[in-house]
Length: 456
Image (cartoon, rainbow, N blue to C red; front, side, top):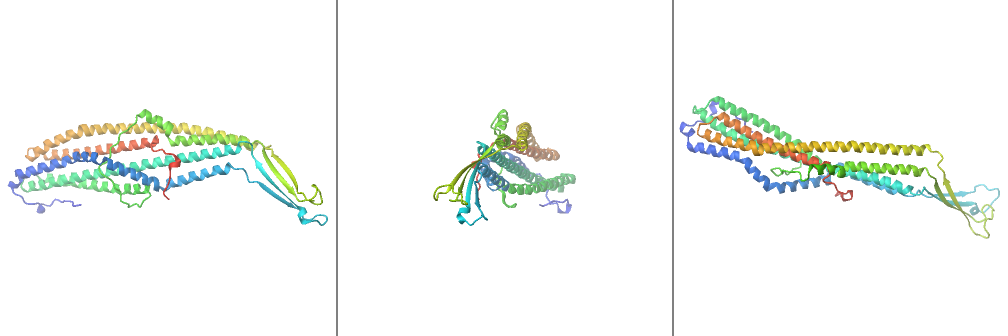
């Protein structure tokens, strides 16, 4: 960027006639009014490009949902827990046993020394279903964690998106300010050469230019880490190009605050996750009770004919013996400890849910206040301060073009106008971010875990 230095030998030469030329004064007036009209034109562009901006953002949200590695990791974690339900809900494997008498007292037919048995164990009635329900609820809790992570990812993408818009809008404002100050500096240099202004005015203009250039460089430096963060959320190359249609879309809440608080209580996946964990703990309590009841084994033993010269069946018929076994859980410490563990887990989850509910509602109230505060500032700047400062600028420009106005007043008003434009844009950004936070809190983007798929 070209940084101008004061050097009287470099000042352009101009005649007094050129300085007071009505054509030049008219050109100055039109140029200043054009620069002041840019924000109005930008507002018209807001309306024309709002749909395009929303489409771009939705596309990036879809890319993030498909590509984010943390989200995929949680998805496979949920699927792995879901597979455990089939494991705990299945009967234990049957037990097979073969016996062979190695050293009989006298020689015998080798086949008459063989016997075999098979036994199937059955836990108490309902034990398998209870265990399966426990794991299914744990899987649902993991699914809620996945959905919450997806919602949080969308919130993060939106926040970085809006902050990039804020930075780009500020950069545009600095560019407009530099154009104006460079033009005013050129005019001041001409007037200084003809003795119509002092060197101090030129120096002050160049100081203002240097200040704006420094703020411009600082703002450009802020954009790069935001772009890297945005691409990281989408799991893309840090230098991947990001399409940011200008200007920024301006959002408003579409539901009442009371409804937002109610949706947090009923739709928040974080609360739903605790509900499923509590239900799983209740099933664990039932499971501990059922584990303390007897289990049964049913088996069959088959012996070869004339097993060890013990003729049990006439002729060559094979001997078959039915078997029933009962496992009696006499040692109760283990089962009692399981029940106490489950009850303590239930109590812990209930306390966690109470604390989390209070925290979520408090966060919602804070974001609602941020939303209202941003709205107050938007109304102040957009409907009050900026229109008034623009009217004052029109008067100051007209006076300065006829050499009846204050040069310092014109610079001050222009700088104040640009500051108000930046504050207005920041207020819109903060309101959009507050809405994104509220959407995350009440689970606007909730979907069923069955609808989450990845293009792998």
